[in-house]
Length: 213
Length: 412
Image (cartoon, each protein chain N blue to C red):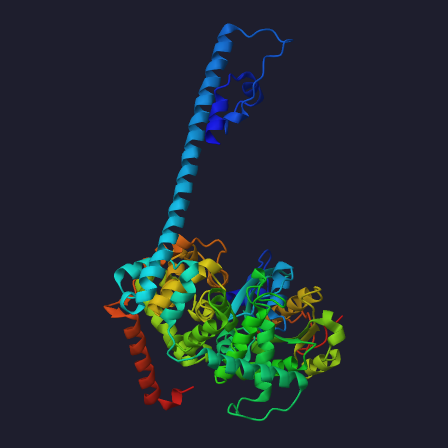
């Protein structure tokens, strides 16, 4: 596509816009809707249970391009899983959300990862593992290291967040946007082996843990 | 009040101040004209100017009077309309109670009743009408409800004390599954109509909602609790006594469309969506083409609307009116309502792209006007090339079955 070539060698004055589909997956009540609501509206309120899917958009002005995130916030109940399959098709990024006070939700996130890995090739989708509700540290069941270690071995972005106290919510979406743009640039460079690869925003594919404070 | 105001306007008022203060003066009310003499330290006005000002003043008073008269007439009309509405609701209650309900079997399908029904069932008889219309095919008695509830309570107890359960008739549904489901009910109750503040912990209907959902998971362990159910049960609780609400709830969920959705029978859901699209194209071809072009499939908005019977997406009073006619016309009215919503917002939806349509339809405007919506729904024809909803749906189901038979490799 023409747009992608533009990104590889951006001519003066051209600031392309990239729309990306980002899907939130995870058990019920881990805070998927709350994360989306905090990120887009910078507010926290008790969400109604999501039935089907709800939608959010956010524009991000990055250095090389404008990123338009189209956020698909899916229903969490396991019974809805076959419906959720409809929703992650064609996604550019996925946030696998678990609740740090509920170990079972991390296992569920791992199952989601398995599903995604069946559907996508590794370079087709950016996946982040997100441990939400760090404001409830006293009830923690999943150690930070546990989530982090799992993410590292599987090549996922990782962050712990709190939609309630607004901790690292912006950061995780920003990290995803950066990773998406970087992949876009790598893809644009790849077809022309003679092109000079001077721009390197990050060295490795596996960028786990880089986002932790 | 009106006479008092116009009476005051007859008092001689000085025009000067108003002219002086504000050249663009528009008399919003005659009471705004204040009596004031010209200050003594100023020279007298020339006669011509005084005459002109008097004339201007008189014109203003005339205008103000006219306006007040108009407003008074409007208020009177509004009052009359309200009285008429209240009277018609009162009359409707009488008609429902004295004529229709005692002769339900013979009258429920008459033209007159159907028309009255369309206008909305008065809240005081709503529960009764819903119960009768939904019926009790499952023959659930109050005793059966008590038994299911007792069983649910036993489960809650054994879960909280950690006593291992004897595997009974619902073996095959793992203990973890059931536990998750019971936990989820607890969680969702507090997230059901939170702004009404009656289903939350400590609220008057918290235990009722908990009981009905718990009893249902014991009555139908094969279906269990599915998110969205709490809204349906809550709407029924608002209109019926507990046991009757349970009976209506179980029978409602037992209808083919609801069963397809709550069992998340994906293939059947897609058939419903396909039937919906037949009528979508027929009624709103332009919008249909726009949705197709943007890859906007019906599941995006229909799932939420159908699962919760609009109780989560429409204002509650409006949702109840949709339920009224849904009880009269059955599942096809759910899809007709969807088309009515799309028709109502056709112009703005045609100008939106995928994500904005999706956002709009999954979060409808809170001030959605009920009369306009029902006018819009009324304009939707549920006939496509002389075929009705049920026929189209049956034909699509048949096609699906044949396709599955023909190519077993395509089976999911």
